[in-house]
Amino acid sequence: MKTSAFANQIEGSKTLAVTARVGELRREGKPIIGLGAGEPDFPTPKAICDAAKNAIDAGYTKYTANAGIVELREKIANYLNKLGGNYTANEIVVSSGAKPAILNALFATCNPGDEVLLPAPYWTSYPEQVKMAGAKPIILQTTEATEFKITANQLKNAITAKTRVLIFNSPSNPTGAVYSTAEIDAIVAVVKKAGIYIISDEIYIELVYDNVQTRSLSSYREIAEQLLLVNGLSKAYSMTGWRVGYLAAKQPVIGAVNRIQSHYTSNACTISQYASVAAFDLSKEIMDAMKAEFTKRRDYVFNKFSSINGISVPKPQGAFYIFPNVSSFFGKSHNGVQINTAMELSTFLLETANSAVVPGEAFGAPENIRVSYATSMENLKSALDQIENALSRLR
Image (cartoon, rainbow, N blue to C red; front, side, top):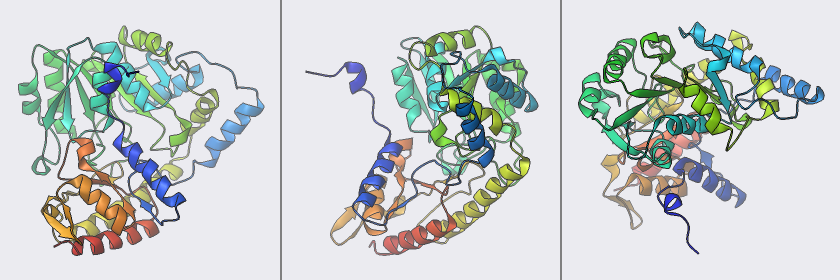
């Protein structure tokens, strides 16, 4: 018996594979420090948990409307409108995390053979989701010299008659790069003129550091008909396991998204939806405290990697990842084991430094590794000291 051609073209998530491997090694008793998962270590704020408990006690355990409860969609619309948008609850579809929201967006906009522009480094699921939608990912390569960001001119030159969608992610996973307002202005102008769709993944929009001036694409009303905005509550509210994301778009796209979702996941978890309503009412102090801790960790991790001989790394301005270039270690070896790729270096660090990172091959950047600083300072100090020691053994 054989699996389908569709299934055979899809690669598994490398980030989830790292998480699974860490779990296996820990069960074997090894003291592995996980620096791979994109998951805040903070507990979900109490007010959110209390709202979930109240929902259960109130009997809110049945199906909701496919698009989500009105109370939550109104909160989301109000949130986006504060960022400069112009949405109503009927232009929001709540999903079981931001990942299916992105797939919904691709299903709603792409025809077989369409091309989707994808800046690299990219989140590991983007190219696979594009293929799942029957489209073809077209990679726009960036470098550390451009702070891992595409330019408006690069975008303009990449657009062809087959181009249907640009996937845009700022702040970026895996690099932590944040596009400035001026850079977004220029990209929006190209998108507007070309008449293509833009899927803006803004899952890290609340995690921007150093007072960088940036904007949500929801504020660009001139592309409202072309924009499919994706966000969720996993990262900023430490709600990864609650699985709540959303997509905002104008008709007829949002109607298509609603129909598509109705046939494969239906509504997001009812209890999680009621908990998410409370998330939008969290005090600013709670959010600021988490962001301040991420900033502190970011500074430590950046300074530590910058001090390691052979590492080249830009300072991330958002999200909770850092993306060091480790290619200077390729060709070196330790105890007869030669390192030629980021994948091999990641395996070496797992085995000799008890530290799990994600190889850059997962993100279309084979010279880099992704390190998440969404873990305690104690873990970061221990892991980075061990990483530094392990790298020093390579000759």
